[in-house]
Length: 178
Image (cartoon, rainbow, N blue to C red; front, side, top):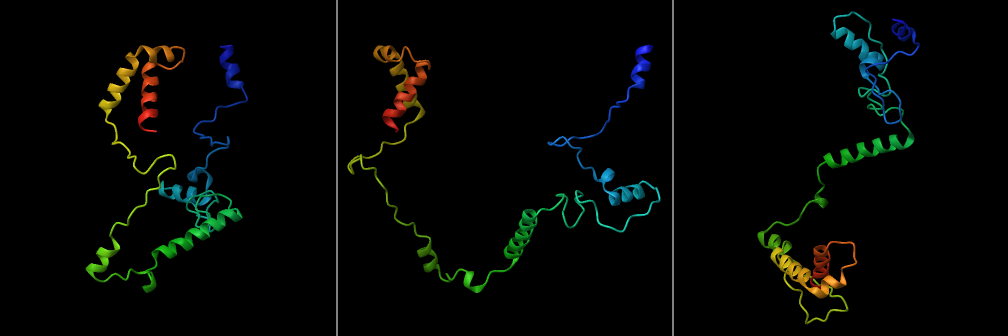
């Protein structure tokens, strides 16, 4: 009984339904923290209250200036203005100078013809060497199996910490792909 009464006397009460933010502050709840949203919510619940004639809280998403982003800094204001400018630019119709001038099927086909590609060969490869076709999974499996069963390969890689099959695969990739 004594423990219970001491617990009831404790000055610290547990606060419930408080969501902390990343910085440790209390998260913004528009119904609790914004005066206008709280008044409108009470009106919806049937309680008659006066709705203040002022703007929403700076952190409220219904605030038309800050859009819930809190106190606006100069950089934030500049970003919002840039966003408005870009939105206006992208929603505007194209000028005649920006439109495509291809009118016939021949011009269209000429525009979409694949351009010749130039291959830049490394200086170590001669022009007569060709790259081999991409190896299939079976090629990898056969090469790893043959290398892993080779006694010389096993002796060479016996002291490495990696599994033998991984070493065989890496060796095959270095020889044939890289």
